[in-house]
Amino acid sequence: MDSKIKITTFANENLYVDKNIICESPILKEALDKSENGEIIIDLPFDILEIVFTFYENHKHEKEIEIKAPLNKQSQFQNFIDKKDYQMLEKLSLNKQQQLIQICNNLHYNQLMKITCASLANKLQYMDTGAIRQMFNIQQDQSREQLERISLENKWLKE
Image (cartoon, rainbow, N blue to C red; front, side, top):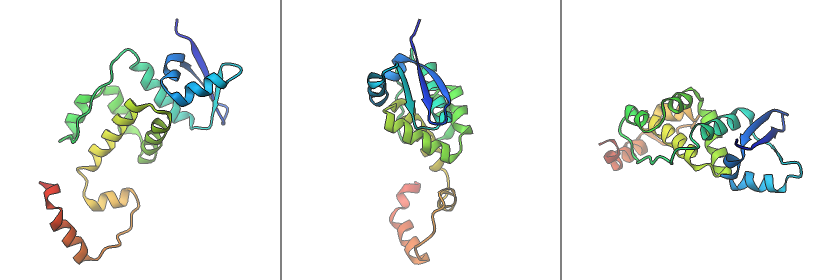
């Protein structure tokens, strides 16, 4: 039977995670090694940690998938990852996806980070500039002439 490690958030919410999954993260492994009681207290959101650990629990006996970029269509991205993972990523808000990417990056959980980045990039590549600006709350600071020049210089991007 796999050994479970108790992880407690600062909000006093608990997760019990397979020790092997904890040890995949050098950051969490170090925290566990320094822990006097074999538990980890961490200042990260419970909901994001739950996504991370559920993902790795569901895929602990699988080899890492390789995602080649750029992907051409949303349907192609769906074919690269597990259906449950795809549905989970689709349900997350942009803010939660950003949090997930940052936390996976900080904890060195690269597989989920790559999949989340690919999912986000795949969504963005088919959006027009205005929609992306609105999504990220980016204000337009170029003149119409500057935008036309930039569009002409980068027309190859739309081919």
